Image: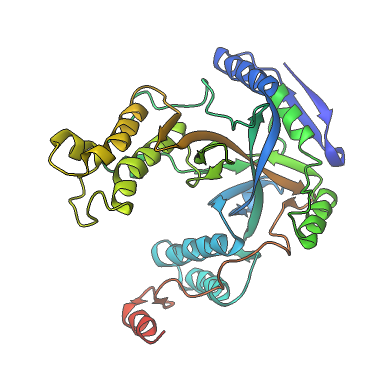
Length: 370
């Protein structure tokens, strides 16, 4: 069962009422969350790269560099690496490799937000990250219907086997939405930055974006760690993860492995498998008392779907975050003039010649003299 509503800019929004049991449960979950969360916490922009080829019918784009980077240049660097490895491993002809290397050369020396290579159009895209807040200012946790692995993997190397954020994601502004997804999409259309804490150029760019990119597209849910000490604000504690379990695994590693080393409770040169849990279990270290809260937090995270732990007055929570891309007649929004880059373009890989040979020696010499 579906219908159409006219969205911003006159584009139709296709609404499909969920009929499958899982979809219906997710929609009910979303309705409960909408009633519970009365405000949004907007963290700020994230950047990635989307591509559009001849097969994408002029409307759809494919994410090729995850939209999870903190500045535009990090996304450009991701595209640089993507094209360099494509030239090294996938190019079938000299002409194809030459075209890819020409794009890499531009990305090494110029601030490039869009380029076309071998009939594929690449664009650095900008998304806004946000999360729901309830009336007490508490940030939303994972919902019962958010995807979880049937058998949570806590073994070493689990991160390498976990789903990658935005892997294979197609950005399709015409895809059918559930009623609550459509309502969220339409309600976020006028979202702009406000308040004195934002510089004037940021406020102007935000207001202008509503006119140049009047629609929005909602990206898949992601998960991250947020932290709060006492009654202070929630602050970011990790990057985005594809599932809540992946965020729990990252938090467990941070609390049981990294924090003890950072605090000097476990030597940095200790064996890789030594952490707060193993030290407390062995009871052979003078730091056992200080390590015990970290070990208990790690154990709690492994018990069911635990989404919040407290250690020494700091609360760590698994937060459910969302991202929206502003969308205009020509597709997703790119970086704004007021967006800040943390570094300049640079060469990231050894020189690769048109024949496919990598010149490692030149790269080593360049690094030695820089």
